[in-house]
Length: 154
Length: 117
Image (cartoon, rainbow over all chains, first blue to last red):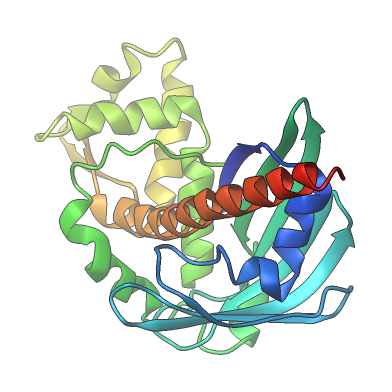
């Protein structure tokens, strides 16, 4: 399974964290890799409902991801299908799963972003990986050789 | 093999600690290493090492060249770069996003407590 997992402890109760994850108001406050703004957030938080979030990064480029809610168990767990809009950064369909657990003083959040195991499903959604990975390699390769960042591989 | 399958093979190969140890060793060996060199620090049998090398080879993470009776194993960095690119992209995206989610949710919690909720 190709996936990235991150765990965070948040000093807020699960219901507050959950609301921040599945409402447009919440999402527009935190979604994105840098301090660039969220431009548009749609969250139809019910099974089968769609989400779409558009944001601008500090380099001025706009990005958009969209998908559907696959699982929704307030305030414990949400799972969404995930696609990037636009060819260059679209590596096929993936899934995003966030699990919340009440702990003393707050919430433990576990986020897993995983590529789909079935290559056919990625293919059927369009161009899939064609070219996308090459572009990503070009983008990152200058700084990769001496990378010592910790990573989690599940 | 398409890209997704390729990445899944790479990540599958990376899940095993012995295979990661082999890759780490190869990273320091510019001229490559022999199979017995690689087996030596690991507490596993030579056939087990061979099996790990097959999996790393399938994932495109290493190359093997035979000269006489000696097989030289070398790191093949392109596959690793592809996997790292995927990981970095999502690590960076989610790590920064979750930092801000944490700040936001903690402020909401503080406000709720102030209101006596």
